[in-house]
Amino acid sequence: MPDPHANSPDPRGADLAHLDQRYRHALMAFFVRRVRNRAEAEDLTQEVFAKLANGGPSEFQNADSYVFQTAANLLRDRGRREKVRADYRAQLGTDELASADPLGPDRIIGGRQTLAQVLHALQQLPERTRAIFILYRLEKLKKPEIAGMFGMSVSGVDKHLIKALSHLHLRLKDEP
Image (cartoon, rainbow, N blue to C red):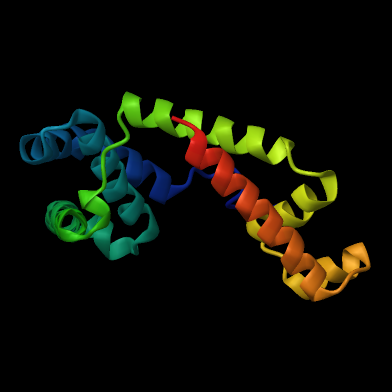
C-alpha cells in the first residue's frame, strides 16, 4: 500500500522557507548593526534558522517573538564568549609567557642558526652516543629502555649521555 504522505511536501520545510524569506533580511540587519561583521552576522542568522529547524511547531506559530528572542540570546552568548576570551588574553598578558620576546625575524634567524649548530655538533658525535642522546633527550625514552636496546648497563647509557652533553656544551660555547 503506498504511503499517502510520500509525495506531499514537508510542511516544516515550507514554513522554514517562508520564515527565511520573511526574517533573513531583518535578522541580517539586526546582527550587522551589532557585530559590525557581515560574515559573522550571516553565521548568527544561520544559527537562528538552525534553532528554528530543530524546534517544535510552537516556534513556527510564535515566530515573531521566537526569532528575535533567539537572536538576542545568541548575541548574549557571543558577548559572554568574547568576554571569556578577552579575560584569557589579559591573563596571558600578565603571565611570564607574555613577557617573552616576540617571534621577530631576528629571533627566528638566531634560533635557526643555533639549531644548525646543535645539529652539526650532534653529527660530530660517535653514532652510538648520538643515538643514545637522541633517544633519551628527544624521544624521551627511559635509561633502562635504552640500555636494553643497546645491550648495556644504565651506567653505560649515563656515560654516553655525559659524553654527548659535554661535547655539545663545548661546541656551542665556542660558537659566536
